[in-house]
Length: 221
Ligand SMILES: [Zn+2]
Image (cartoon, rainbow, N blue to C red):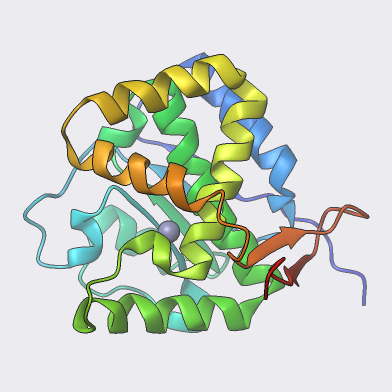
């Protein structure tokens, strides 16, 4: 049966700038997210001390239809998850909504990629969720981008940022991050190193209709 496209509904608790609304609409169009039933919520709060570690993050995507509602959530988010049409939820913290535009778009595109992965390669989402739990317990310690689904989300976010902001603005952003001795600097040094490795498997949207994901065989693999 032909599925009727229902766009994700967006709730702005934060007064997101017109520029960012336009950029995130361009991300939506590029990602083909109009197949998903659910909500994007731009929150006007951060929750650094929330008992649910999910809210101590900057953003998340969850599949409510498969995983159920997160019972320990701020009330307005819990109410949203309990709506019958909330099959997917992307939550974006105030920090990200108020960040410089490249960071806002980067994180939004990253979470939107998780949504598309979940629609097209649900097995990958299961693997990602498993590795998120397993990796902190293995030696040597692994980072988020060592998880294939996370690495793919970062590469997709990078591609969209370069497309929307241009290569120079992207590179200036990365340089600023790398020069700062912050967690972001450490991360970008590693990201810039691993994204050129020829043996890294990549999950790529097909060039045909652009709506499917397939595993790309590593060049050296
Ligand atoms: Zn992620």
